[in-house]
Length: 214
Image (cartoon, rainbow, N blue to C red; front, side):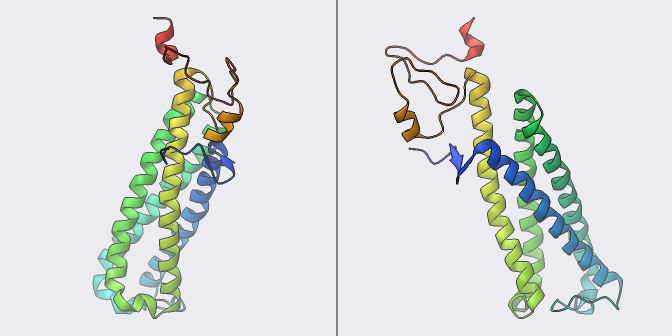
């Protein structure tokens, strides 16, 4: 049995899990944006220092690189937050076809965000070096980045599974089965339900709605 796409995530249906992903992205993106603002403030103001953080004057000679990283990540955080808000409305309000296209775009945005975030993190923490684990704030920021990256990768798998689920609904006009064992409990001959996938008829094959009237 293939791992992907998921039929559900934890105790949630994929539609609810996608909403949870959007709320997670809004929360984590907001905190990430605040950290970037604090970083820029420490570079711009000598009187502003983050307790337990890397002293701004220690990296003053490479401030251009740090400022570029801060601006790139801040913009990416804003894009992610805005698209996540749109995603919430797409799941709760928009028709299925529009939700399908918006969700595909959302997965692209999240993947690009992960890649950009990874590149920026490699620059930052390779420059910090061993100091990453010597200063309290740096330890927090590194662990937060690691947790966020793992969660974002997991979120990508959830969103991908939701895309496949919607694609199935659009193609066949019915909801996919929630799980293999549940389909086994509801496999009475000829039974069809909006919550289960009917079994393939003997000697035949499933026909998408787009081809059924051709």
